Length: 211
Image (tube, rainbow, N blue to C red; front, side, top):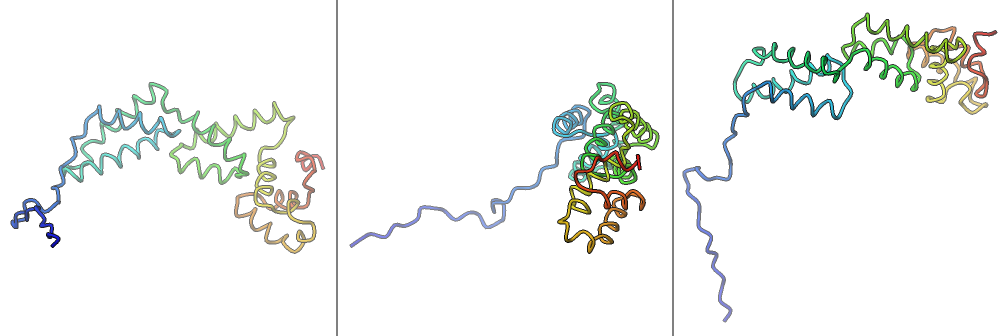
């Protein structure tokens, strides 16, 4: 006869002391050293503006303070001190961030209007945005023979979205109004959108201003 194997596992206590659940321990307190580590880890992974860093630190502090039943607003000064140290060390530079972000937006065909809105959403102030756009125009004038940055962005947007000259020839006219609406929503003027959509895909993008 095959003997049955009897489990030697003992029943646990029935008072709930060892039911497999651990009591949630409060997280360690908010300290300057901890915020420095959070800052370093974040900036090693992402480019950021001062305001973006400020928001990240505020979220992390809020989460930690909730677990400790503390008031997160008590650490507002510590956030500002941490951001100031990052600025002084060159880890965050709003002008540098804005210029890099604008270059990326322009490559994707972002209009000036939308670029301004997106930079503002990242916490860049109006003065820095205006200076960044002015520097872009100056660089374009020097390097591209007075090429218009907005025009080049419009062509990039049309190319990426396959609008106008980047559609199949037999579908261009039927989609003209739809393409105009798309470019208007993207922030381009009616005149510029109309000119871009009427051009040819292999046309020199600076020719619109020369007509």
